[in-house]
Length: 407
Image (tube, rainbow, N blue to C red; front, side, top):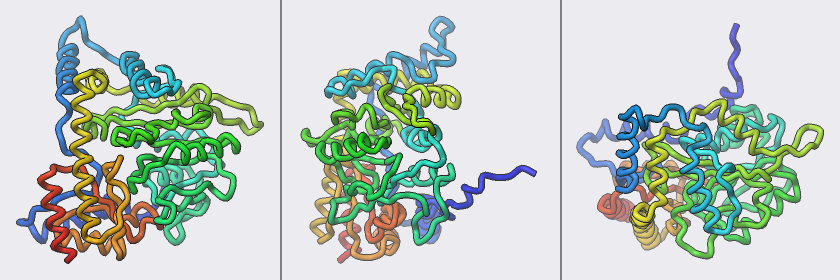
């Protein structure tokens, strides 16, 4: 008799975006003639930068000739991409990150969910609330929690974000081993300062903890005083792993390319207390379970760093940030408190009512899809998240409809 991993049975019965999809599908079926505007899930809507398209075509042409054909590539990623990432994303900002500390993958979601595999099932995990669900669910699957009770899993240390702390949680009140942080934050759009990040790095150093730092939305940071990487903070190389993505940076959600940074100085410990470098552990996991991103896609990612690519990517991000600023401005004019929309494509809105109630109101009265904050944790109740990933024309129409619905 084959037995299942019963930790899967602890998972909440339905996933947030599945619930949204069901409600949206039911509404569309009942109202087939009404145009829905989707500002919920964080999927980009604009075409890939032209520089990436050119590189993609060129690489595909290489695959058509025996002389330039590529088969299996290095699982960690081609050197041409890892080297330019290290130079442009880190060394240019004074962060000492080398090419062999970068692992190219098909998504930050995958890596942030998979990274916990290399640690003991007994570690204590700190989760921010509101939180990106992948951090929670993958640790539940691994057996690090009890059952869910009153919306929270027993065994996690929850770090509350709220209006009072600007959705930048305080340090845990008890010892923890693994800490998930995400800035610019998904879902709230909040952004930590250098001083705030240093507090977390110092905590991790003092308590032999590790930070898993999700920086998938780094490209949206426009405030020059804010850090783009945790490695801009002194001491972070020893206590932090960073996840990055080309999905939101350059529209690669359907193309799939990301990378994870694992400094060689980053340490974990054996049961006996011996220090072990995490870099070779992740290298072993990565090369065992992953066969690398395709050559044409890595060439397209490399083009992001070309002179042409940089201009085009900035224009792409500026477009979405303009949408975000417009959404926040309109919601604040309607009397709603907001976070995000600055240095982030997400606007986190105090709905003054239940999250799902606000979701249903906007769906049925304005034909606009948002994301209920309650789906991101207990501290998200009463909030909604609106995404800037759509055309400006649709954003304008959506905000006009919302304004009418909320009068």
